[in-house]
Image 1 (cartoon, chains in turn yellow, green):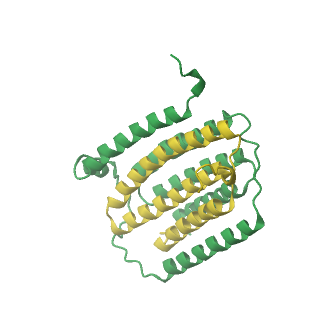
Image 2: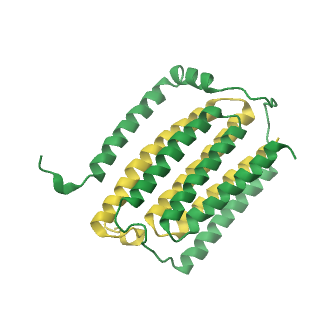
Image 3: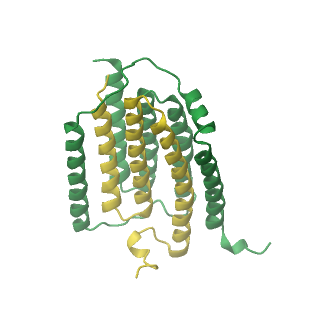
Length: 100
Length: 169
């Protein structure tokens, strides 16, 4: 039996990899995929807690996170591609139309 | 070493290695494929954690849906896949240091906490029935809201993503 802390550690490592992607890359699609990695890391820790307590609530929450992630991917990717078609760039530094 | 430990090691290596490819590869198409395998590995970990329903959902929604959507988005958009954006080294250093500090703090937290484990059963118990009962019982309102959210997102994505030149019908 793998100890619970190892599952949580895996989740934290995956989340940190996602944070590195969001903080260091400028390609909007890479940032987008890093956000998906972080969502997966959170789901992993929620399922670990659910298993720890023998309780289904964590798994139900993961189901809703997956729903929101699917919606987010559909709309987010559409926005990024629409911006790319209009401005020919996916660099987040150049998407500054709404910057004050 | 129990087989489950071995499987966990393989899956964890797969997930983290693919995560690094997603973040650090310069070609976006390789990142998208690595993301697919990373999702796959997370689904395997769900099976190890006795969450059979969610492992199936992970395969259908993430591997079959989200990854393929991102791949189609990249492949069907002209010239989006060989764009390079250069990152400044200050951004890399500050971002890397921040996330390393974050990782260190959370890892220290995890390994110093005395986790209270309630269940000790090792055998597999199917959970789809219980999850279905919960969705049709206490969680019926959030379940219906999720359905409406998906509908709204679907229509929104179609409206944002379509070609605006073919407006006259």
